[in-house]
Image (tube, rainbow, N blue to C red; front, side):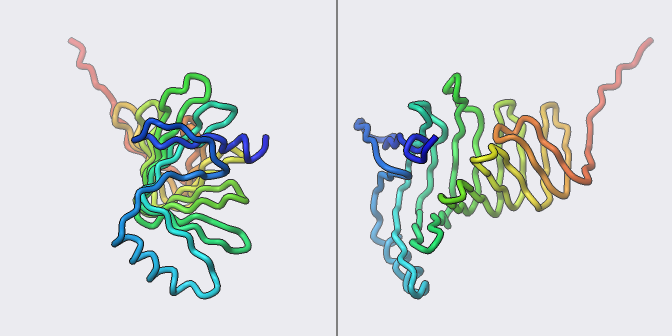
Length: 198
């Protein structure tokens, strides 16, 4: 699978047109104030080219099937030796099941970083992920390795399962659907239904 097939689809959800663009094709709406702030940030990055994009709304597809939908108010593209994209004002990723094309979960965070060459997306600060069962995962960091199809965190994580049971761990790893989690040094609070018999 090539990068071109991995990220072949990009669609502006608020419009009616459909365009095929290269990796991370973007549709933007510009905001004068945001761009002025971006220029201030960029001026502090000596020798690094920064390309700002506002109103990011993009869809990534794999073999004509929607893989994820990414939303961010601001994206800064850093043209370094290993290019990366910084989303400093928040990011939301909506995940889709490849077979059913139904929404299978989402991830939101205060900051996102996409490292294209490594096929790695980082989420930092107030990270909340929800899976298809409605279970939630909260931490201050989350890494999504799209090559291994794994998500993981090296910081404390709290998992709230169906029925209100809560698990806490020092670190976390799961498949990228968040359905088979492993927590290190885990503790939990479990609700037990007590039935009184006569």
